Structures are given as structure tokens and as C-alpha cells.
Length: 482
Ligand code: GDP
Image (tube, rainbow, N blue to C red; front, side, top):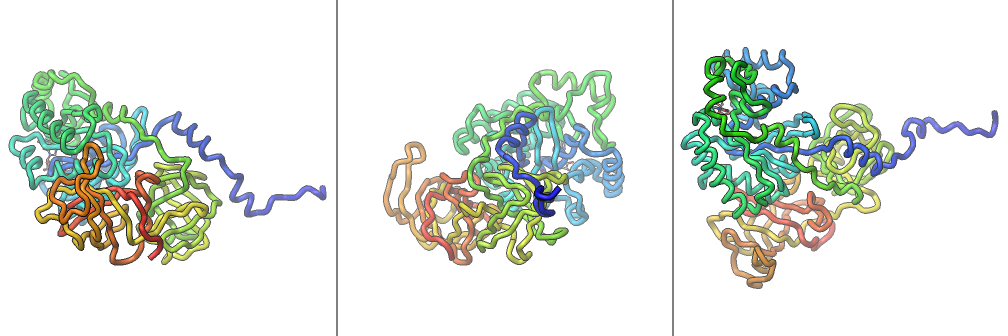
């Protein structure tokens, strides 16, 4: 009948506006989502441990693991089969190190995890920074082998550096996998000694709360205590690699490891708290990847704040271009909305591929993110050899950006405990000082927010000559635009 208007084709396709906050609360009530990063010294066994855990958890199909097993045997390194679960490309296999921040999803009974696999090699710290910047919680893997824990924990090892970085980047809960316990005969004394030494450092120097540290003894290689404990009469934990201790050694493992009565690694991470997400703040998504998608510009990244839905008009910073969210995918499934904490793939229309890049921030039109080259920050200086002076050149890491700049002003040094000013206009900053500084970028302006406005987008990391020299939070934006 006349008078009844049919909705336009576009409106039908885009559908009704969704009350995302309500939908989000429903979803959280079902199962909470967490972003997990795995850190630790090179060769601590990170890849083996995570690969084996995912296998035992049933996240890797039998065919894939058998193939990796055959390939690994060909090169005489059977244990690599599990590590390969996490790094699939040929180049990485050939070099035997995990290079990219690959993303894997898995679920436990009460949690959904996005695993950001951070590599352990020193050269890859910038990658680790972009991985950790997105992480809510971390597993720090340490090698309990005699001498190996020590070399990872000393001045040149990455155990301390990674833990400090993770803490500076906002990770509060840390699970420490005291790994390769098979190599020390499941010694309780060795485990307790490592716990003691690490706890001292993590609480005192890295400012983790003691109650947020959980130590789990395990072996990524045999699979012990990752998902299950070995029982006498069973074969060892379902290990797929042929050179893993199986059969006759099980009784001994059960006996030697009887002292441990705590949770397995998977039970531990299943109990981690999901942080409160800034769902009701203005929309922010930092872009980690851009490519030409079907019918638009595909952008991958994580929502740092707010929410977004299909059909919504958004702004792309630093350029300030407008675009419309044409479609959205999460965990390879189409979806109509996403909220803070979600990693998604958004396809944008009304914009050119060249206008979006890694490090761009998609944001709300009504409250766009500031874009700047000059800001104030409160920094903590790490173990630097040369004190920081005015004009000190740095590479500033912020989300996916690595931008050259200088420390343009030393405002004051600050007491770490009280937050009070110790000295105004200091001439230099030595190691372990906390200070207020100004930073000027020498190139382009980038999207940046104060820490007060965004815990995720308000953190920076300063590096020089391949070393991380300081971490900090943005306290004030001092200029807008380029
Ligand atoms: P990543 O560099 O931290 O990812 O370490 P990988 O997972 O590549 O492991 C490094 C080396 O340690 C490899 O040779 C592994 O076979 C070995 N390894 C890993 N996990 C264990 C373990 O639980 N026990 C023992 N004995 N060796 C392990």
C-alpha cells in the first residue's frame, strides 16, 4: 500500500544502530577476553612452551603437528615441532627464531586469549614493544637450567629488560613459567631459588605487586604441568615429539615433581583478571596493518578505547580524513561492532589506501586524538651508560611508530615514591632517575594522547643505539599539528 516507505537499500544493508555498551556487557558476562604476550630471554623456551600448550589444549590439529614433527626430524631438531606451531614462515624456520609478532587465538574455560608472541632476540625489541603495548597480561618464561637462568638474569640477559618493559608498558599481572624443570630433575630447591631471586627484582625494581606475580614450574618440552600433570601408569603428557622423555621416565617425573601441588599453567592463566576497558571513552583504534581489502581499505588493529560499528563514520589521524566502516571482522568472523580491547579488521570506504598507514589511529569524529611533535612526559631512565642531557637524540616508540626526536628540555627530577620534585632544571639524568622532560620529534607529527586520557596511547618508550634507555607517560601535549 502507498504511504508505507520501504527502507533504502543502504539502510537495510547497514542495519540499525546497535547499543554497543549493552552488547559489550552481555559478552563480558559470558567470557572475558585478554591479550597475552610471552616474553623472556632468547632460548628460554617460549615458542616450544606455547606451541606445546596450544597443542595439549587441542588448538592445533593433529595433521599440522605431525607435519611439523616430520620436518623437524629432517633437520634433526625434533623439539622444534612445537615452536613451529607459532611461527609458520619458512624464513623464520630456517633461522630458528620467532620474528614477527604473530597472533594466535585460544580459549580456556573462562577466558578468551589473543596471544601476541613476542620474540626474544635482542634485535627484535621494537617488535616486542609493539606486541607488549597491546598486552594485558604476560607470561615471562625463564630457563631453570643450571647457568641458563643466571645468564638470562644477568646484566646482558633479556629477562630483566623484558620484565621492565612489560611493566612500563602497562602489564600488571605476570605469570612466570619456570621452564625446563626437566633439565634440573624437577628440583624444588632450584624452583624456590629462582622464585626468590625473581620476586625480589620484580617487586623492588620493576614495581610489580607481589600478589600479581604467579610462579608456575613446568617443562615446555615434555609438556609437564602446562595443561596436565603426569600420572603414574600413563605415558608422559601426550608429547608429540619423539625425543621427549616418555614411558619409563613417567614414574620418576611423578615422584620427583610430587612436591608441587599448585595449578597448571593453563589453570593459572584462566584465572587472570581482565582489565577494565575504556569502552565509554571516545573511539580509538591504532592501526597495525593496512592492505587493499575487498571493497575498501582493510585496517587491522586493536581498539584502545570506545567502540565502533558497521556504518559509522570515523576519522583517520594524523591526516584527519573521514571514512566509513563498511564491514568488520573479529577472529575471522564477520561482526557488526567492536569495543575497547578487541583486535579487529575494519574495511573502510571513502578513503584511499595511501591515506592510512601502520601507526595511524582511527578515531571518533567528535573527539579526535591529538596530533603532535612536542609534548611533556614523565620518564624513568633505565640502566644508561651515558647520562641524558638536553638535545639527547632518541628514537621514540609509541604504538607502531618509531620516530626520531630529541629530549629538548629537562624540567625536573622527581622522587619515585612521593612524586615530589627533587631538582628543577637538572643538567643531566643518570640511571634509575625519574624525571619530567620535554620531547620534540624531528620528523612528522604523530597521534598521541596524555596518559590521563588513555593508558594505552599515553605511553612512550625511548631507545638509542638499539638499547631501551627510558620509558614514560605523556603528561601534556605542547603543540598541536605538525
Ligand atoms: P625461545 O627462543 O624462547 O622461543 O626458545 P625455543 O622454544 O626455541 O627453545 C629453545 C631451546 O630450548 C630449543 O633447543 C628447545 O628444544 C629447548 N627447550 C625448550 N623447552 C625446553 C624444556 O622444557 N626442557 C628442555 N630440556 N629443553 C627445552
